[in-house]
Image: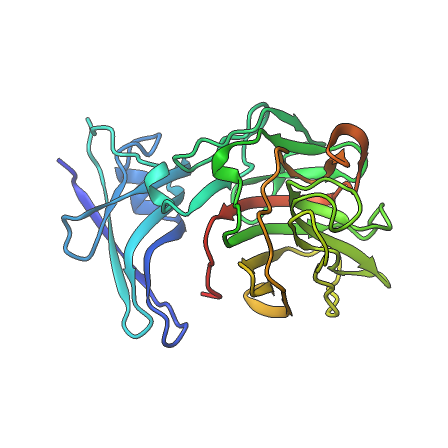
Length: 322
């Protein structure tokens, strides 16, 4: 039996936009939780507003009343407050975690990058875990919990190729939190994440999510998709942003139609596209660098990211601004 229940009220104020199966971050510090919950937080779980419909949740961290968890909210209303209940206080709780269930089937990789060493684990059911990790500080402070700090010269995280990480002629969304430092080391820009490698645009299929130095700030540059044929149509952003700050950045590719870019929820810009073929490649997905050149591993490693990257997500669908 669970002894305690807390009410979590969500005020979602994006007018006219209701969401379903939304991954909500619960990040709280609560003295009652400290007194009543198990030391490892294993008894904590969440329900919808009926108090009985159990919600998927992923426990990121728990210690002495400090809770960080992802919870899949079934319906998030923009017109009325959404209520979620948190239960705790069971001395012998059953297993109640289902981390992969938090992320809908269109999320093909969610890398929290909060591991202190070794393999970086994908939170989705696709299990797109890393097989190589070279980072300067795997315990850096990101947007939530831990993150990875990249040194701009040798660091990257590699996730091996998988069918779920190839998008064919379909749409995709790439998201991350970044904190780039004041010097970007490669004049060609640096990579947040990609599976394309370097080479002449229009010659090598894949996608790349990049930023570039611009008069002491950064902007999106040479970022987008490539089907290995001309015309090559990358996005070049005009808005610039200061270094040494945390940003949520997003690239949305609407197949054969448009590229859209967001910074902290605001539209940075768009680029209209001509019809494209498949952007599939046989390359791994790499965070923080390009480690392929013209399709060859380690032929010319470059475009290393300098700074902190957190919470990298890939979706095989369009994600809205909400």
